[in-house]
Length: 231
Ligand SMILES: O=C(O)CCC(=O)C(=O)O
Ligand SMILES: [Fe+2]
Figure (cartoon, protein in one colour):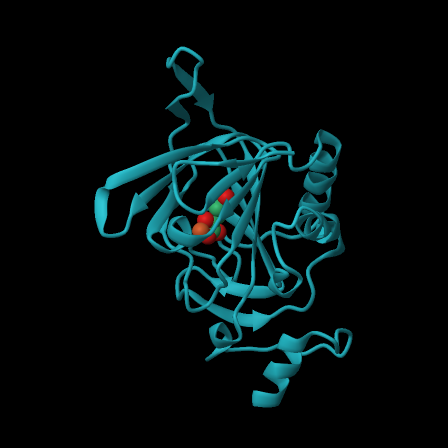
């Protein structure tokens, strides 16, 4: 497993972070859970379907709505691998995972993951279809950078790529990138893509949380205790 640096500071892609069998098992586990978005709360206005674990995030209000408890067990091996591969330190362990589903023709608008809510490392595991992710500098829209996200790859977004750029995925069904050995263009035909984005919600990011589901089943979760104390 090789951590490939890209031309953008703080941006890495690890290909084959999981195996094909693990990918299939994840898809099976994810599809057995209920989806929201596309008419269903918490983000009914979104066409794209999502699942929220750890904390519920409103894309419209760009804030954390409630604590949902621990991440689902089907993500345990992924978080374990983050630690084994030293992608994260123990104290940076993600406490939130949003699963996004992109059917062909669906994408995500340019945005920077809120710096006041989320920690310095954003990790996104891609399943099924490849796609291109575009990075556009927040202060200069002409400074752009494209990276391919192959199935089963892990994207690591830190430093400049995480704070100074907006990232987006187009709705295009056919995408082109400079990938061939002789510099020729390569084509991606987009089909269903599912991504798992892992983040750490900072304690300051929980200000003004609208609802809070406290569960005594996870008393060692420092963040939940913290929230219980300040509520
Ligand atoms: O689908 C992805 O890989 C990225 C999702 C994303 O940028 C987000 O949820 O903020
Ligand atoms: Fe994002």
